[in-house]
Length: 352
Ligand SMILES: Nc1ncnc2c1ncn2[C@@H]1O[C@H](COP(=O)(O)OP(=O)(O)OP(=O)(O)O)[C@@H](O)[C@H]1O
Ligand SMILES: [Mg+2]
Image: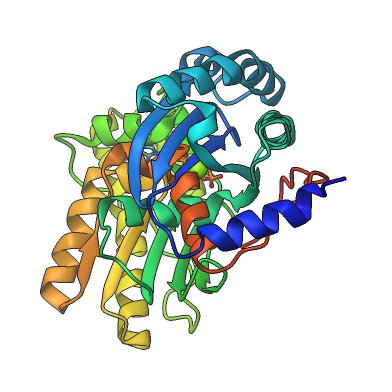
């Protein structure tokens, strides 16, 4: 009798030196159900079904509702992704799936579906870390990119400055000690009465505003390049509540702009410091907050001024998608990754 894992191992090793095979990938860690077909570092199809409208009325993602919707969507989105790519399942060479970090129930839908499909179609399965997937989005928009490079990963659940040596070797140079920057954007939006997700809302609200409120910077002058966004969020909340209690008129645009300016400022300052310390002159932006225009412009301008190259994936590849998972898997295959066993489980708090 054939052994699935031994068979998968052989298939992956024969793919290792190729770049023209199709990977079918799945992402369901939060509120996007996403399925993609990739070939090497290229997107062939990239289907993203966002649940934002469903969760908006609750002011944030409701985990149980997210997993139920993933379960409803994943099968027909897979059909859509294959159709859009103009291929059949028999043309696919490997399956990739996000297995963490994220919401347990949500992850389980993608993991179970990918495992079943991989087994039924006799395909090797690659288990991908969501955060590494965000970093890998840069290989799509900059196909010539090779490590080492610095990655600024700014998302809804994570904030890291990474020294990327390979997919399996990413050194953490700095990390948030409390809230992720995306989470801080979401909470800042809530204080101003803006809907979920807060990042794009703060960005919109900040237009025409001025950074008149001086918000504190935590961990200034520390040796590590860590972040603390909880203090920034609290300072913002106190500023707004204080003005409301005193009955003072204030401009929400100025508040949003002050918050955005400080959040972006600390991300860019620490990233520039990472470049100075490591001597690595390429910086890749990743994660949902990477869609923020001020962050993109400020980081690019700093790169120009200080002589480092800045890679900015298109906004659609910064937020959650499955193409980044497929390309991460392709890179992992090139590096000789082992296939995932069918006992693969979702890991909600998977570390880098
Ligand atoms: N234009 C923007 N400006 C600032 N923040 C943004 C913007 N667009 C999206 N975001 C923020 O990005 C976050 C979503 O990003 P992403 O999808 O990468 O996070 P996640 O998948 O929930 O978390 P993680 O990737 O850490 O598991 C949200 O917090 C959202 O507010
Ligand atoms: Mg994400």
